[in-house]
Each structure stands twice: as structure tokens, then as C-alpha cells.
Image (cartoon, rainbow, N blue to C red; front, top):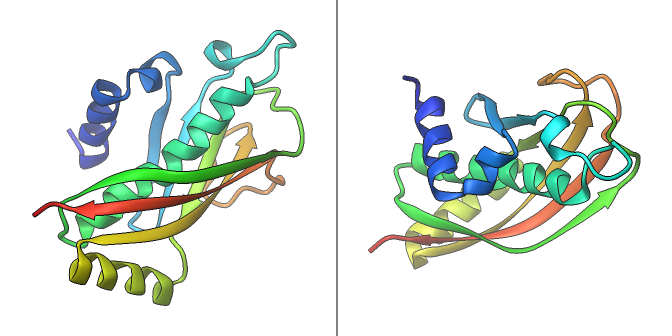
Length: 156
């Protein structure tokens, strides 16, 4: 079982909604995380993606990316979302995926320095939400955008 498979199982155990949504962690390379979900269990009354499901997958991509990247940095911590907003540009009419990337290296390094020094750090991440086949470099424009601020508390 890969690290991503283990993390997937943990997420399904601690966030049961992710199992009901059939959210799958598809790809992680140390700088970005791709999370996909099928439309079937996540549609609304019009047959398009339910706003809450779209938001949840976008948040999961950002939250999961921070969890994995902080662990990669050798820090044991708790990640929580402090604030978030979503802009829905167009309907999602197929299976969908969210792609989130870490901020520029200098910003990420400042965040890790604060986390190590003070035991707490804040970072803002953005996820794009796309319809269709999951791709690391989507050719189509994002159907929605999420931006959220996350707080990480280092374990003592």
C-alpha cells in the first residue's frame, strides 16, 4: 500500500463524508495534490455538481496537500481551515477533480519557519476545480476556484 493509499484510508476514516462522496486522492508529487470525485454521488437536482460537493473536494485538495507537505517537512501537526471562499464559474456536468499546488517556495519556506519557531503557521492555498478526466496540467479552464487560509498547529 502506497503512502497516498494510506492517507486516503485515513481520510475516509476521519472524514466520513469523503467516503460518501467517493473522493479519491489521485496524485501527489510533493508540490501538488489532485483529488477526483464522480458526479453520480455528488450531483444536485439539475444533474450537475452539487455546490457543497465541489467545495468539499476543493477544500480536501488544499487541506490534504498541507497535511502531506508538512509531514514531508518532518513536522507533526494539526491542519484546520480558518476561512475559505469558492467562486463557481460554470456548471460541472461530468466527473470532476480539484488540483491544488503549494505556494511559491519563498512563501512556503516562511510558513515552515513560523511553524517550527512558534508552533503555529498560517498559509493560503488555491484549488482549481475542473470537469472531466483528471489531469496534472488541465487544458480546459477551471469551472470553479477555491481559496482558503489554513492554520497548522505543531504538536508539542
